[in-house]
Length: 279
Image (tube, rainbow, N blue to C red):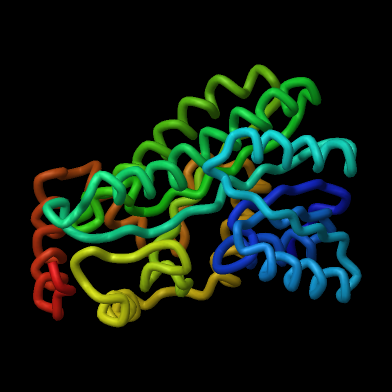
């Protein structure tokens, strides 16, 4: 069944490309009014124009989620124009991969500021509005990397584990205010982040080799991910893993952390086997 969210107002960060663009498009096709927020303002404008040409109500705003004042203003703009905010998709994220001995403090700061602080900024900006409304749904994009043992992805995995933990706690606290919370945990999705993306990079392996490694894991399209995950969001699911086959690794992590680490160790060997970047 197609998604049906007529009249809902949704703000999607990182909404100009990849998963964010697919989510914004699926929401618009389902009848929602979408606000596409992204550092890539030109791409956001282009997507909003395409959606409007299809009869949707779509806006594009430039937003760097690392800035709380900017996020607070973005939420205010949505509410002032549209009257409320029904969905906040804290989707903006970057991938900075590599083994920890290749990381600088700047690498850590970059990924924490976007992937974790960006989510916190979104919650701090939108949650009070939703409490006043007595309704709303916060959807945070984490990753399967936030549920299992990962190697050569310590920064990414650390931030995504934090987003999962934050989402689980907020879901319990927000229930009394009539606010729902879900966390998306994508498996491998064919987006620019496979090779680092516009703002990401890998300190150990070059981008083309990273893309090849990702392709071996049979990534799904962002459109397929958005269609499946948004149905789970509308149902009110708490932790949403798409595609479902990746749940097997999550089950393994919970059943036997030691075995999960052995699997991750084999993955590290495959990563180290490809041509490294200069250290």
